[in-house]
Length: 391
Image (cartoon, rainbow, N blue to C red; front, side, top):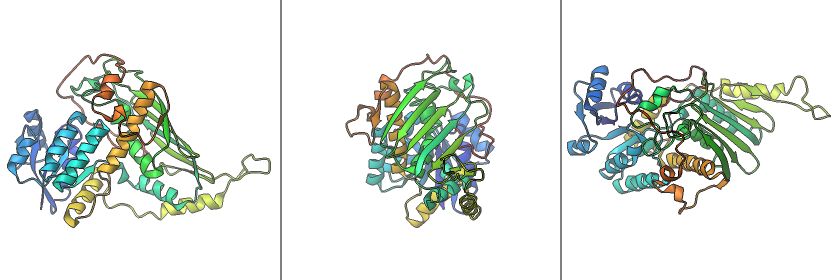
């Protein structure tokens, strides 16, 4: 039986707790940690965890000595310290997105994993979704042909009150705005589907949240060898219509299942009917997909539990998390310095260091409120193409 603790009992912790409770024969929740103990107490009552201890510091978990796996659901600025301390003590970690606010912090986590012999997994729950797996299978099949363009719309909407929570809306505590804390889901998926680009250009702004320092909208253009990808990161998008559309030379495939395959007339214009045979093959490939047994956070928790039970690596590890942070860091540098940034980032890149982003990033507005908790539930975009859940 794997003994589990959760550090940080805010909104996203509910997804982790429910996932663990879905595997009662494999794991048990023994502790909850929060700097606001009353919030942890409320979570304990909500999920019927009468036997779980409540603590105010992750270090108290180390003093317990009976915890095997910890979900880190605390603010991004704490991820490095909490993960490093636990990993060095040999405690396995499943860390919410983003892995850490800087590449140096990601590297410190990876070193601690090696030193402690524990397992680290970076949350990327959207890889455990049927629509995402179908899209990856379509691209891996090669049927659509070489990729020309990928359109990624990480479209979310948040009201002003969202940034009133004490750790949100500042470069120092949140680590960034929508590019880091919302589009992180889509950035991970793009890297999983297409690999890393050669360079990136970007623009950042705060269009609608006068109570936050950070950006609420960014647009990045990623250059591959012959392809381009665009990522729009937003918390100003009414309707939260999220999309991933991949244009191949022979066909396009989208996260929502849409398939289009054109055929050219002699004059180069598209023929009226298109390539129905190829479109049919791509749809048949999608139809043959066997639904995943567990999806979302439940799917990733199942994967991590399996890794601990069998000694294998988790499907999403710290190297995956680091690659995502590297691309996001490049987007920020490109937007702040208004220039093209090449990838991979060099080892001495100043933006890889903790504090550089917070030092050089524009303060679009001053954070004007700081509350310890917010009423209401976490919502997920209603369409089938919706990705993840922002914290």
